[in-house]
Image (cartoon, rainbow, N blue to C red; front, side):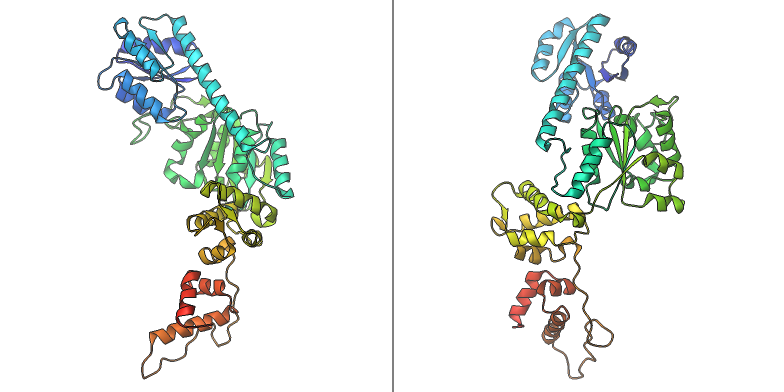
Amino acid sequence: MARILVIDDDKSLREVVRFMLAEAGHEVLLAGDGTEGLARLDEAPDLVLSDIRMPKLDGMEVLRRVREAAATAPPVIMLTAHGTVEQAVAAMKLGAFTYLLKPFARDELVLSVEQALHASRLEHDNERLRGLLRRGPGDGGLLYRSAAMERLVQALRQAAPSDASVLLVGESGTGKELAARALHDLSARWDKPFVAVNCGAIPGELVESELFGHARGAFTGADRASPGRIRAADGGTLFLDEVAELPLAVQPKLLRVLETRQVDPVGAAAPVVVDFRLVCATHRDLEQEVAAGRFREDLWYRLNVVPLALPPLRERPEDVALLWEHFTLLHAGPGVASEPALVAALAALPWRGNVRELKNVNQRLVLMRRGDTLTAAALHELAPNAGGLAPAAATPTEPGGGLPLGPLPADGLSLIELEKEVIRRALALCGGNQSRTAAYLGIPRHVLLYRLSKFDIG
């Protein structure tokens, strides 16, 4: 079944085409002119049928805008009368799949639609295959050398053929969405949609309509129907990131979808059958969330069929160099290298922000580099707290800790002398380590070096 958008200002023709296509098993969306048709592109049709001559916006302009809308724009079949055949041919040169001459027979319509849908599927399959080949063989695009990641990838390969729900757990920044995509790419659903939803990024009052969809007029502002993210994943994989953030009121409705494989759009008259594989991710302990009453236990059981844990970057330091090289190529292109001392320093850091933090630090060093070599000195200067490594806690040598300066002198105070004294004491507290001193004072390392030189502090 495909979702087909029919744009024509002839109401009787629209209804005839709707009947023919519905009888062939398709879902049909209708629009009375080009402007309304373009507005309905939000409903993600798989194919567009458009008349050429229409008021407001003609079919040629509709075709141009559909083709410009996205790289994966749906195919377009033009509908034309005898007098506009030349325009229809011109439309094919602009990217239309074919044209149908009015009046057309049911079989002619259905055959053209099936041919267009088949060609579109082949194009999408080829693009997906090219993407998989670019990502590398058999690992779903994950980069690793470590045994910990090898175990994870092996578990993903084992879980991929099944439709069982998978729960990915791990700290923020460990690559849970990448693992979900790998699971999808390694499954039989690889050529169908992968729909990712960050549950924590959707306002609470919009979660239900965003996930389950809504009918037109279901609530104030719902001026058009929306299929929702679950139906958008039909045939493929639905990835719910930060699933612990789902409102309690929505959780039983998601449970019902998992049990019945039917979704109830808000305000719709009847449920819609859906077929998808669910993958969820969280950095929280869902068992603790259940105990605290913030997450339904029955839903947790449904999600936790195949639990997989992503190791933090600090537990796989052998992957740091490979990831750093990948990010350098991504951010700088070929020709920029990293000195061995920098790579060694990176591998020794705890990386509390994990791979995401590593990527951000790499981008910072690439953008601020002075040559074609990334150095350890640049890391200490530009990212003194890289990896989440806080300055070593100093042991105060004076009562009360910190940098006590005693009472202010009655005869006045020089701000320059005060600044010198603060820097001297901070340097002493940090054992002479300039990077820690800069971090302690909350200033970049190069600013500290300038002050040390200016005040002749050794």
